[in-house]
Image (tube, rainbow, N blue to C red; front, side):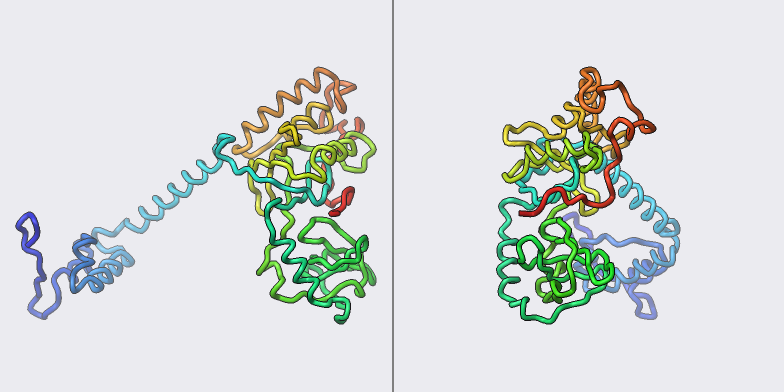
Length: 330
């Protein structure tokens, strides 16, 4: 008997079947979970209801469709909410150290306070790789590679093979080298990326587009400006958006000034025309700086407004798909 004076129990049919189980199996009833779960027949009641749901019997005729529609609506609402701009105070802020600059808006960096890299390098150093057998890997394989500039061993991903030479990307720094098989070794699985994730984090300045880093114009000036603002010292980074493994960020120099605003204000970069909704506020603020740069004829705007068709003529080109290697990891 419960608190309301109701008798709680089980009824049995002449064939000794539990009436509650039978009603649930036919889809003529639904469980009251707290009470049903405490019952001696709790598991049987649950199985009976699940069977009725699966077969869409009686009261469950449209249940699966309704549940699927509700789940779809919930997922859509969650996705829409995730695309809404987030106040700056709620975004992730992290101290980072740049390790490689690919162009004026694209770079790799380490989390400054993370000690994993030092431990990783110690483990690599303890492997006596110089005495190991040279390795001839396939494209996409993770190996240990000896960097040309300092003759030290680092983890690397083989990007391609050309004759006897291999192009490798150092996954813990973001820079590229071309080496022979004599500078490659098989990597212990315990040091692979599945165990220790790549320590170089790929970043792009959110909503910013620049020219090629070796174009001799604004693109090259943007590389130098980014290096002057952030190279060789820990800098504050605000994460604006994540796209796969790439972080779209706002980077601040030692004076806590936005590097993106500096580049755009100097006419060394442009604001991307199309950005995700989550970056709409960031883009809006940067466009104000872009309009000011146009008005003052700064940088690429010195001859007036330019569009996509004549951007190259005035020193602006889309960012290259491959790194220029303008800045090294050391």
